[in-house]
Length: 132
Length: 93
Image (tube, rainbow over all chains, first blue to last red; front, side, top):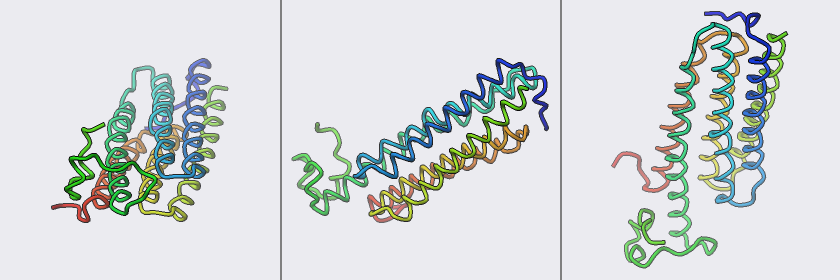
């Protein structure tokens, strides 16, 4: 269905525009970090800016615009925000542990060595995460 | 007036997200190791999802919401299975 933006009040338009610009700008900032940081473990932090505040800002702006244009609460966009917030830590934890496992099995001196209990079993070295 | 503000902000967001997607693509091509490429692919998925969300707001339709949701879900599954592949050498054991 098409929306008519003419009956959106001015304050709602300004707030939604601010959320759009903040969300897109923070996503861009995160990918600039992804492109310029020197090592993988520094780079893995940067794109989370886009999936936390980036997605949150865009979703909030979209909810404000659609709610103000149709005159009733339109909240389905929050599904995207919840989904991005829940899934990103899971995937990046998996990716970080996989990368740590690869670096340890190659004997890369830049990563800390495996804890003692897991050092005897190389197949479990990537999963032994309880030792500090 | 408010339509002009919303459409202008959506175009700014389009530009910023397109630049973000270009940077992700560069990291995916140039990334020194496999995990850098997977990280860039995940970030590219997020940027494409937000780009579709912005497109839906600018055109005033709710059709693109489902497409953005599906892209987010595919990105989650893709990154998770690629990380699993890096760790164990196979996806389903």
